[in-house]
Length: 200
Image 1 (cartoon, one colour):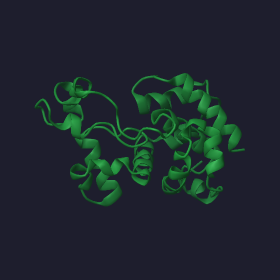
Image 2 (image 1 turned 180 degrees about the vertical axis):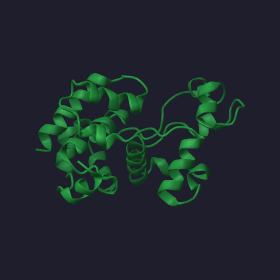
Image 3 (image 1 turned 90 degrees about the vertical axis):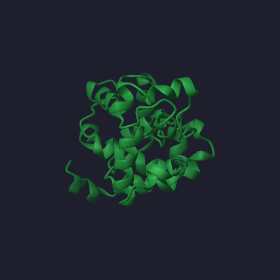
Image 4 (image 1 turned 135 degrees about the horizontal axis):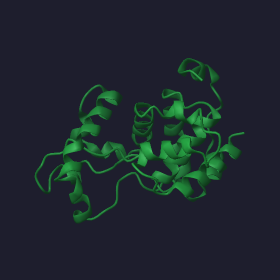
């Protein structure tokens, strides 16, 4: 389905009840995130059953069912973002104790690193405010919108359109584009199956 056709599809927004059925551990966070998720899915043409199910499954896993919008980890763990190849790839400053802490993963799909923060900020605001106030990513609306931005940038709508089942290679490919590997694949698959049922 083309982006134009997807925009015309205009399914009903997801309700808090539906979101809780998909992500039962979200609890009260479901109601907090529904407006931001609906705005995000509308903005980024995540408007078909397959796209919504894939997006919600991935976001659900990445955020611990909406419990976490900020990457957990001590100084030693987050130090991996300060120096070395990963830090360089993320556009972080090369000194220890620098950008790694500031630009840790945030949002529902853990946008990470100075370059990604800058690019996302330009896309969402037309300026670089997220470099100065990275905590904005932790607010439900921006946590959601940043996930939609990442989803669109990675071309995941077109992949979601091709997913035949939670077990097929295309769903795994979506996971790899988000996670860099297949961490939590079984949970993502379970959430996808549940989302498909709820969104019928």
